[in-house]
Image (cartoon, rainbow, N blue to C red; front, side, top):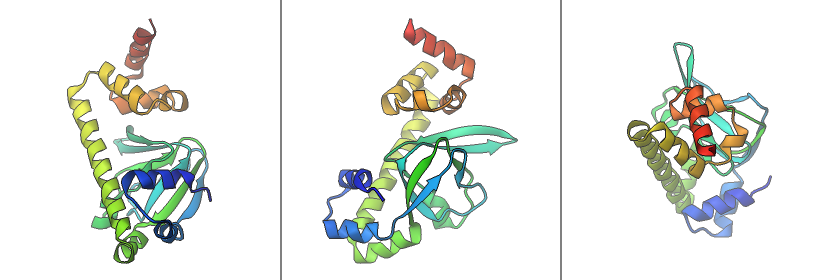
Length: 191
């Protein structure tokens, strides 16, 4: 199990001692997903926090048979529906691998046990939650306030790797526009 990437992310959030990280790492398991394999499914209560060690995942909603892309998770992203876990309610989204993925997984219940013996783990979880809340707020504001061109520009800044790794129709879906509109925006940027 390669831990360099998760250690680097850990360090961004909280200071920790090696023995603290080792205690956390003992609870990690590796999950390898094939392309199109589901990690979290709709109508199931979430149980795990994941860290994307390699690959890319897509989170989406389905309404009346139509898919709505909510997020993409690339390397070094933390994933998992903590609200579903806390409320013991089924997830309303599906998270699926868009390419082969390696995830480092820790059950939420194990994280909660760590809070008592390793306070830095609670600080870590809180920091991740705050980061997710900030990103969610930023995305919602962008969908309401920004033009499609501005949303595309922000995507290029925040997640440039998506452009070459994700089908354009999914990027358009994420931006809240039609694929033809995305094509026009891309052509305008090139010329």
